[in-house]
Length: 364
Image 1: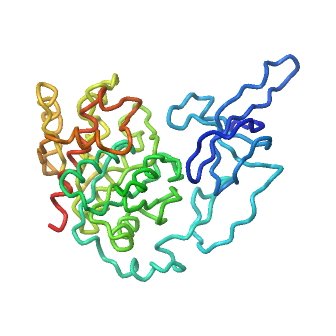
Image 2 (image 1 turned 45 degrees about the vertical axis):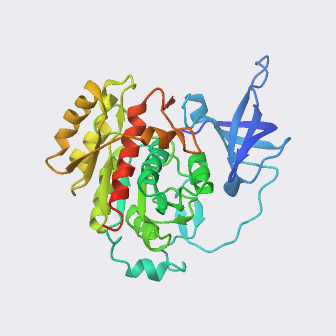
Image 3 (image 1 turned 180 degrees about the horizontal axis):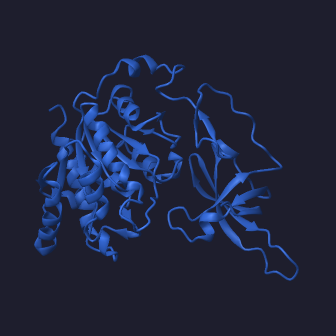
């Protein structure tokens, strides 16, 4: 449940569009208690306004107190003494529904949208390649692989709601858009704040194709993910459902394998059980499962693990030659679970290989 705290903004820290990061002293309770601790607090400016030094803020410290990595901030819930002005605008899609911070947005697929007619009549995505990846950290690597083969391809991120709900939490998406590697982001389900909003992953794919003109879509959750160490209790199950959605809409699903040679958890070494479950048991439609041509014994183990997916899917072995150079040339440093390219090359080469294969399917 929510852990409520009151604090005072001491400093505004380096931030990015849509987000203001602050150093906040948190009120201590009780006589003789320690001096108020200072923590980093994140405010979504479109939701709660922009905190300034001296402002009183109400905080949710749950993720911070749990010591979470990606989401380990205190979150600003309100500026009680300086409420933001009402923001008028079209749209009746409510996201983060029935929570204290539910937000109303204009959906690309709703009746009041200029795109409603196009999406109402759209029957599919015209054979568009759709790369599906488990983790948000795979996104830049997939783009590196696409750029290696088709540097001019127009790529759109379709963001699922298994991780962060606000798209602006992702600094990756912001930088990749600014650098021209991404043509846009469509937020689906309960996720919000993309260039376009959509109700489902299906209408998100249609919007990517018919509104943003995507040559390739990359489907993944926002930063952060949820896992429980159980066979079915992880947010990446949605990857299998995304494969089904892409196939139903006449796209070319390309499954990116989550691979690691450095993860200490046995279930994620080699091909992660997340990929084996999502693609092997949830995805009912066939996809191209990209198996990167990794060298040595580790590469052989990956190929052996991926073989269990061959009954339903087409395994496509893709060379990784030149992909490390493409990863190093990205305008962002790739990182997954705190590990960079040096620590876990296989993780990023696998995603880049999926992008490379998807690029060969454009217009096919």
